[in-house]
Length: 210
Ligand SMILES: N[C@@H](CCC(=O)N[C@@H](CS)C(=O)NCC(=O)O)C(=O)O
View 1 (cartoon, protein in one colour):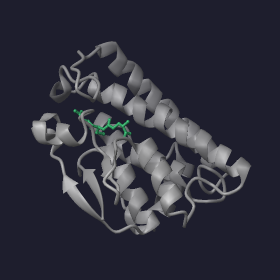
View 2 (cartoon, rainbow, N blue to C red):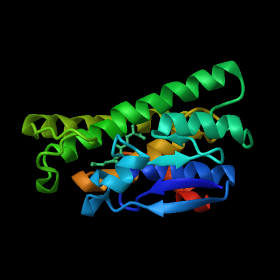
View 3 (cartoon, protein in one colour):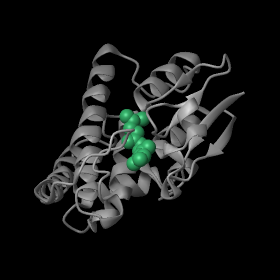
View 4 (cartoon, rainbow, N blue to C red):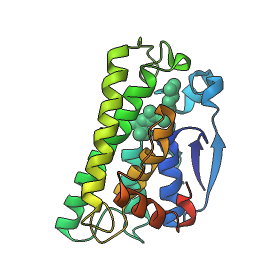
């Protein structure tokens, strides 16, 4: 049985959790409490020395320690439904928007949140090394999150889904980012009608309830 090391309060493991649900893969879950620092403890370090969630243990016992590996593995192991695209150009388009959802969306939120929240003092980046906050990066992150919403809205004005006509991993990652923006007090609103339309469409999928 596959095991997902998950955390209900964090965006990164939510991506893997949604992907497993969309693929219809039954699995065990081990909850890791990031608020209590469980990821830094010896027990979890023995599973994932990078001290981050998600991690996924395969049926063969291999542990995959990031979303990139988990997505590549699950798409290859459970090809239906395809979530990384089918045609060569569709795969390219989805990869491009997936990267943008990660870098311009999730990373911008992390930059804003981790460099400003008192709870993240000394923890500006995830992982085993402590890094100090840089308040200016927090400010820059807020500007980047706002820009990302505009980028999404323009894209979704012309396409049903982020990658085009087909629901994909790019939508999962972008939806997780849009939902997690609340931690820096940014939400899509009437300035982003196409984002709102798309988020409501995704919410018809059980795994993508906001
Ligand atoms: N590259 C990793 C990043 C995972 C990541 O940053 N996870 C965060 C939660 S969203 C974490 O484990 N944080 C632990 C910490 O802040 O100490 C992935 O996407 O799988």
